Image (cartoon, rainbow, N blue to C red):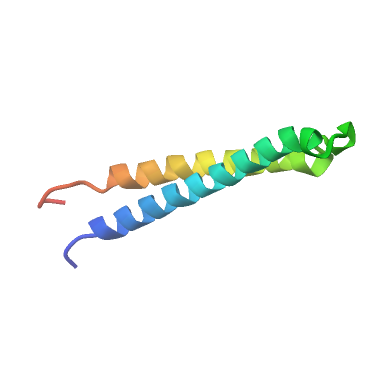
Length: 82
């Protein structure tokens, strides 16, 4: 077994990619929820109850995954002696 550097890098980068994807989806939902009443021309299309659950779900999960990915990348020590 040479090293597990590549495994840590892969896991860390995958977690950070998923975090960025969830953050982007959360931003899309937030912008669409804010501009939906303007698009449809009625105040009835404001953010509904289940969409309020999407914000902490997407943004919270993305920040947790980003932190875990940063920890995984920090644990992967460069150099020959691991």
